[in-house]
Structures are given as C-alpha cells and as structure tokens.
Length: 548
Ligand code: NA7
Image 1 (cartoon, rainbow, N blue to C red):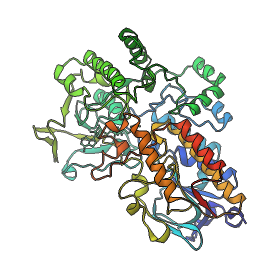
Image 2: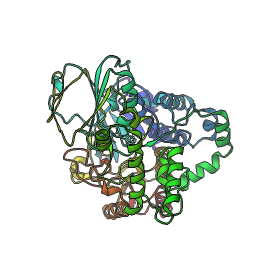
Image 3: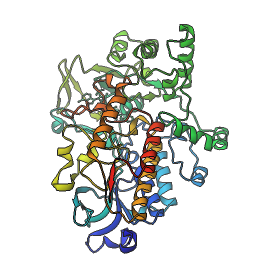
Image 4: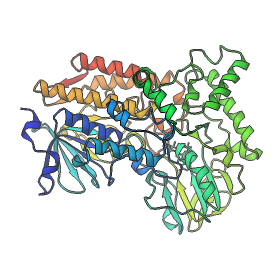
C-alpha cells in the first residue's frame, strides 16, 4: 500500500511530540523546497519541509544585505511549471531586489498553500537510515522527530556562510555583519567607518550602496574580480508583454541551452574575427550588460587565448573607469581567466573606488593579521572601524548537507564518506544512502546553470522517480557505487574541458574553505546535456540505481 494512504498528514502529528510520519521530508523552504512540496503533494505524497528560518525563501530569506538582488534577469529566474503562476506575477525590474524575490516566494507559498506543511525554526540535526523499516529517522532541534520514506536535500548551494577565519572577532567592540546572515532590523551605517571583507558577487553588490551610506568604507580585497555592468532597468509593461507573448519559446530555449539562460551564445570563436569586430562585439555586450557577456563568443570558457581577449577588454574597462593608478593596479584581476570563477555583475562597482570616502586594501600584499577591539590590523597598519561586514562567501554545495549528522547503510557517515570530497551519482544520490536525494547537489549543473531551471529539472526527475517506486510497489532505491565513480570521473572530465579549474582559489573547487578537499563540484557538461542524460537513465529503468 502506498505510504501516503497509511500515514497521516504532515501537520497533524507534531503537537503531541510523537514522531511525525510522512512519505517525504524535504530540508529547505527556498526555491527547491517550495516546488518539491507542491509537486509531491500534488502527486499524493504526504510531505513536510523543514527550515531554520521563520519563513520561506531559503537563500533569499538570509541574503538581505544592501544591494542584494538577482544577477540573472528575474523573469528567467522564476518558476516555469505553472503558466497561470507566470501570468499572475509581475516583476518590477530587470534584476529584482531581494525583498521582491522574497515577496514572490511568499506569493508562491500562499498560492499553493504550502506553509501548512513547513516546519519553520527547525533544523534537522541528524538523519539515520533505518534498514529494517527502509525509512529515514530524522532528529530535529525543535519539536517532533520525523520518519520518512524519502529524504530530500533542498538545502541550496550557497546557504552555509563561512565562519570568519580571522582571529579576534570576539574582541571587536563595533558591529559585525555577514552578508549571508544579514539582520532583519535596519542596519544604520550613516556616519560610521565600515569595512567590507570580500569582493565576490555579494561584496560587489553591497560595496556601492554601503559607500553611499557610510562615512568611510574600506574594502579588503583578497582576489581582484572581473565584473560586468548589470544595466538594471524597470521591467516595463511593454517588455513584460513581449516576454509573455513568447513565454513558451523562451522557456524552451532556457532548457535547451548549456547554462539554463535564454540568451544566444555566439557561434564564432573570439579568435575567428578581426580585432575590430571583436572589440565591437565586446563593447556591445558591455553596453547591454549582464551575464550574457559570456556569450559574446563560443569559446570564452574553453579556450584560454580567446578568454584572454575578454579578460583584457574588462581590464581595459577598469583602467578607463578608475582614476587612481594604484587602485587600478589592485582592482585588476590577473590570476584567473574571466568567468572561471562565478562572474559578478554590478551597478557602479568600479566607479565606487573614485569616491573620496572609499579606500581599497590589497589583502594579498598586506594580509589581515587580526581583528582588534577597534578595527582590523593588517601587516601594514591598523584600520579603525565601527562596523565590519563579512562578504566572505559560503561553504558551498556540501556545507549544508555536512552540517547534519547523516548516517547511511551499515552505520556509514556522510562526513566520512565525503572526507575526500563529494561523491554522487548524477548529483542526485549518494551510494550507501538509499532513498536520499539531493536537489542541485554536487555533480549536477547547479551553480553553473540558471538555478531555477536546474531546480525544476531535479524536482521533476525526483518526483517521477518516487512516483515510479510507488507505482511498482518498490520501497528502496540506491545509487550504484560504480555508477557514482564513473559519474565522478565524467564530472572531472567535463570540468577539464573548460577553463573553470584554472581558478584554483574558487569555491567551485572548495578552495575557499580552509581544509576542504579540492574537488570540482558542479557538472560543467551543460544543463541540456545533463537533462537528456538523466531522462535516459529514468527511461532505462533507472540505470545505475538499484531499486527494489
Ligand atoms: P564568494 O564569491 O565566495 O566571494 C567571497 C569573497 O570573500 C571573495 O572575494 C574571497 O576572496 C573573499 N574572502 C573569503 N575568505 C576570505 C578571507 N578569509 N579573507 C579575505 N577575503 C576572503 O561569495 P559571495 O557571497 O560574494 O558570492 C557567492 C555567490 O552568490 C556568487 O557566486 C553568485 O552565484 C551569487 P577569494 O576570491 O576567495 O580570494
């Protein structure tokens, strides 16, 4: 008998402290968790989602720092599974702000009545596979334990902020904030001396706005970054109408593209055209703005010589924008190819360094030694501060999963099994952990794709798989160890065909977290190719999985 028919609904079993029995437990109530809840509930499974936050949103709940906004055009960074939802929601800007995205996710939660099956303020502390019952037993830090047949990680790729790796944080007498855990109350920066540590996407979004508010801003930069202007603009009624008239074609293009975006990647190599044409094309892409810059030529991510032309173009732009030559020197990226780390897009980032109240510190030349009660001491000097903002990134992709104590078959632990780096089959399952699935897990396109596209594809695949299990009276599905090993080799090979591993300090490789194994985590073979492959796996009786 299907589990859904013998077990009570998610919300009924929590009040008396008894174990909550469900078919499926989902960790996370962001883009992935919300869609999973909706999709699985519609398929007749009892489902509960658990989230530490007090509302939906996931990444977009926590990242509410000044300037936080989508860096993918938001009309493309939206759910596509329900045409009525697409018509019902209107974005106000090309790149929506964090509050607007959070409102959207709240709107989705209301529309499908999802909150009744979400346990907020709750963290899964441990998850243990019960071999006899073929179920997962979940312990939480708040309320009833959970027993589920399927356990799904919708934990997000960038949801565990890195702890500060700098001595003395506790001694600081001023205020400390993390971009990835920005408070809900208003943070007043007017009249204050502020530091931002980190110049990834978050730092690059926050720095221009913090500079406008603070009396003085000091930016501590470890690695100079390439950034392309966003060219944000209101999303006009005409633009909305044009997109909506072509919705299905645009959506189809997103799904058939390598990176889940609907823009064209040009067919020519950057080396095939004259220098004049190349510059003309880069100039047009710069003026248009956004991540589409990467599509100016076919081989910017695969051919170093071609990439050099794009990198040089952006370096020249930095020289043309920033006035002080020493600041230009520090801001100019030289140690990795453009887009081999996740390229930020910005509004007035480089321009901000022309302001009188902004200073730049090259942390490579003058490393941060400690945080003192009154500021930050580098090997050069002490910088007196009232506020320190850590924009230092995340323990990406594996961090949120490894924060839980996950025990699979024969008492194995995920922390031990992944001690040398994550090992998955298709970024969907880990051998030794039956019935546990990951959405946009390591080994899947995830962060190299437009995330909602990757999330919808995974959700639909997992829902279909679980539906197949129910239909055939099966209760346990587990990835084959050899299939996972082969897939891991393929993930490595796919990365090796690109320039991505050349950024040897990137979070794609785990290199931003001290002691984290260096394994290239996302699948660089392309979203469309991946979706085709995983569909074939399903059509071929879930090849590479053992189901019984
Ligand atoms: P990122 O992209 O990981 O950026 C973190 C930044 O913080 C980056 O410049 C790091 O330098 C710097 N960093 C990290 N640790 C330190 C220490 N200990 N000292 C000095 N500087 C440090 O995170 P974001 O939040 O900006 O962006 C994450 C994703 O969100 C982004 O890719 C988009 O997909 C959206 P490094 O480069 O490691 O030398």
